[in-house]
Image 1 (tube, rainbow, N blue to C red):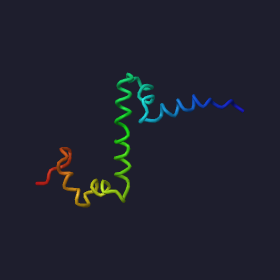
Image 2: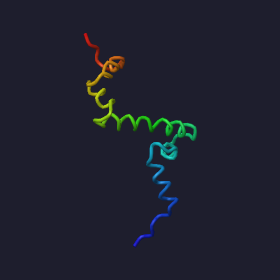
Image 3: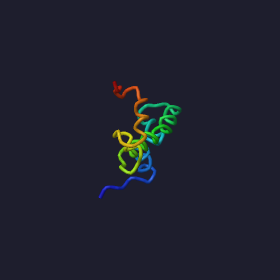
Image 4: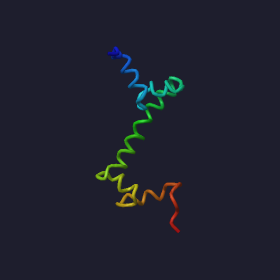
Amino acid sequence: MAKSRSKAARDNRANQLNPTHPAYHRSRGASQAEANHSAGTSKPVNDNRSRQLNPKDAVYRMTRGDGAESSSASSNPSSPKAE
């Protein structure tokens, strides 16, 4: 049986695979400052995606054109303009 990795090695690997941890960005060549900034901005992106996939969340309905909040989608410059 192969020797299992140490806890520190497992933790390091987990951190390098987690985009909300600076080690993820450092392992991809970012400086420490860039890594800290990128890790700090990764979580809201992930949270928004999960909210968009949750049918009980208002953001879900907004991204599909349902609900009262859909009028704010027209302020998105990439969305098609109504003529």
